[in-house]
Length: 162
Length: 178
Image (cartoon, rainbow over all chains, first blue to last red; front, top):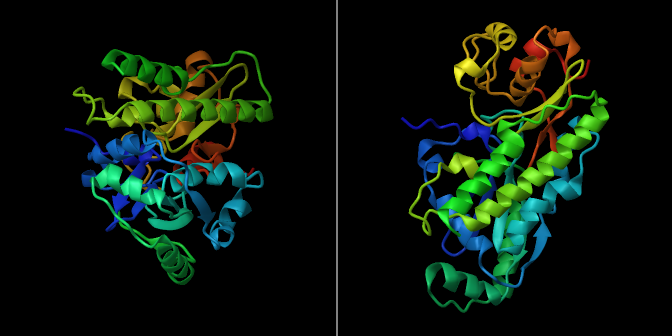
């Protein structure tokens, strides 16, 4: 019988909305069997890492410093650049990248957005690569909607059952 | 990439961090040990990234347990009187790999492989990185008291941020701030 030892790992999980992609770092969270034993997360990561697209511009969550202030309190040597590096990498690949907020408790399922991409026309190529369909969207409008959503809804950590 | 090359890559990653645990004979200061831990964690992360770029179940029929190419959540270094060692949160060891002094320590928490009934954490007894690190030191210094072992701060290899000591480890190794 396979054992779910997901709390040993800092997994990369990937979720899709209609046409947006989310990356989640689990930081030792015990996730459910359905997610842990599903190889599609690794396959998607592999696909992403092998796509050659110009990296997207990205932004950090404007509320990030506030959200992770507890990390600075418990860690005097906290290195912000190291902290954001992986999440930026996924934002540059076109994903909204989230981290688990309170990593000292492997059952706490609070997450926060760290970095997100500024979408542009090359996102059509990403969609085409993944879904095999051609999109032609107004990314200026989408970026504005996303920014508003982040300000209104992602300004603090939130519960996410995985 | 061929299956064999993937297997070799995985073996080298595990050898580097998870299996060998690099016991260092000469005594190092805790600061220098912490620097080694950070350096090792960076190299380990690069190696894991490399295999993640190369291996996908869609492209290869051979299914390798995915736990072999996921980043561990936690790593730590420990210093005994003569030896230092590293440990990670990667898997519970087979029961016979826990040495007598380690088992004696863990008995204070309960049964290896189960959650402790004494503490409030859901961490499994015997799985913490600190336990793996001290167990490695006991291989060379079996008479060592737990008071002779000091730990670096535990870190998350992905971000190199500090992970506070869990309740289980605090109970057997003491408060990390003291």
